[in-house]
Every structure is written in C-alpha cells, then in structure tokens.
Length: 56
Figure 1 (cartoon, rainbow, N blue to C red):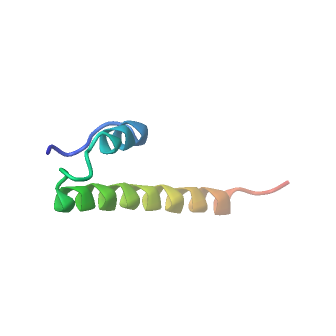
Figure 2: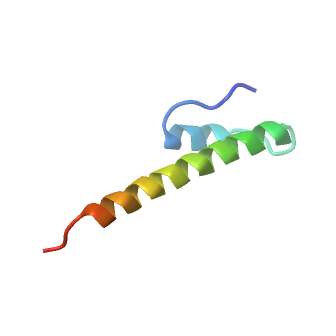
C-alpha cells in the first residue's frame, strides 16, 4: 500500500478504510509511527509558543 498523504484528517480517513484483517502490519506500524511523530512535533512547537507568550 502507498504511504498516506494529505492532512491529518485525510490520513485518518485513509487508515479507517483499511480492513484490519487484510492490512499489512509493518505498513500500518510505519504510518502510526509517522502520525505520532508529527503529533509530538506539533505539541513541542505549541509548548514553545506557550512558554514564549507573556500573560498580561
């Protein structure tokens, strides 16, 4: 199966269409690892933005 592409929402929709019995476990693991890595990167960026923001 090809790698997922598009926004996070589109990627989740593509994953939802995969039949669990027919899916390739290694491919699925790679996609989930990629998604979680991107999520972690986003959380790190948001944390840095929050720390840089001054409260008034």
